[in-house]
Length: 254
Image 1 (cartoon, rainbow, N blue to C red):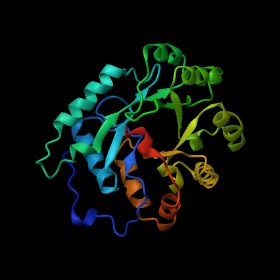
Image 2 (tube, rainbow, N blue to C red):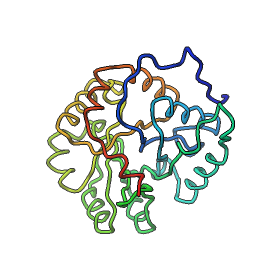
Image 3 (cartoon, one colour):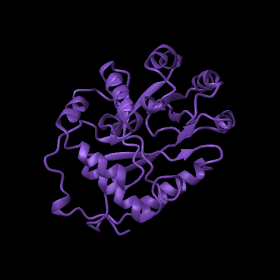
């Protein structure tokens, strides 16, 4: 796959401003998880983020037992490798400043306490924010102890895409998880129905109720990118986003 080159026919028209210019959840680092497979694909995805109106992004590769055996050193090396691959004088390359930092998306699984003892990857900004997700089949029985220990160590857990967990009801999220200390991050594509009508319904509800502090693309591949481009042309969805105050800058800026 070659470097991304937006032609006139690929221009978003008309488009609407989401009011979100920092993407805090994506999988654009090459060959680490189920996101970008190589440097060239990473350039494509980064150029897509720029076209969507993002000026900065923080890459968040998966760390999950038995699935993605990433660690702090490997993620940082991949981040630097991608950044060094960008030629600012090449018009087909995205700007270096778009790749503003790296963190990780931690699965709350059986290795999480051990990883926490070694030190978790936090977002570049102040506050020791850490992106976490639940296992695909359900909540770990020790989730409350995990979050308590995170908070005790000074970490602030950010729960990725709470609207997508079909085993978590709105009542459980607002009555148990948020009071326990979770901040919440919206997957933007959830609002478009990309993941199904029930998830869209939850995302709309959580947005209406002001549950989210952060929003991210969770960008993995070109199919996500194309769906985001279509969503950028949806006036109603864009109005919902632009009327909402997200705090993404807290995760990047000092």
